[in-house]
Length: 143
Image 1 (tube, rainbow, N blue to C red):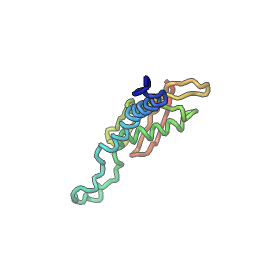
Image 2 (tube, one colour; image 1 turned 180 degrees about the vertical axis):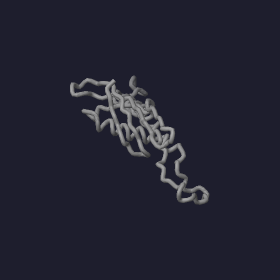
Image 3 (cartoon, one colour; image 1 turned 60 degrees about the horizontal axis):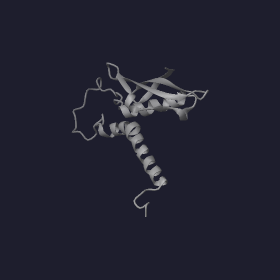
Image 4 (cartoon, helix red, strand yellow; image 1 turned 90 degrees about the horizontal axis):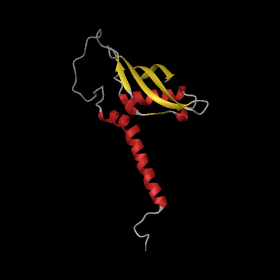
């Protein structure tokens, strides 16, 4: 009767694991995912028809890259460049975005940590240059 109302150690560990998983999701994954779903699309297909522009002015400009998409693509490139991809860890809160004045080029900077060949975790930074939603250049540096 002394144990009534008390949880077993396995139930406590299970609850703690669920709580940690939820915190991880909210801190690292949700900001990028929510940004993609909460920001309006750059191309509005349901808008009222607009008068045609003259052929000389019509250009296909790339859509503005969302921070969530920039984070996912740049972090994937960081994992490609890392010696041990499974050890790469970063937070979407540390993402920095800069756009060129013409708005066609986007730069994303993400600090991340990864283990080297000596199994030591080191700080790195990756800078990705985007043209539209494609990475055209990526450089990672330690420090």
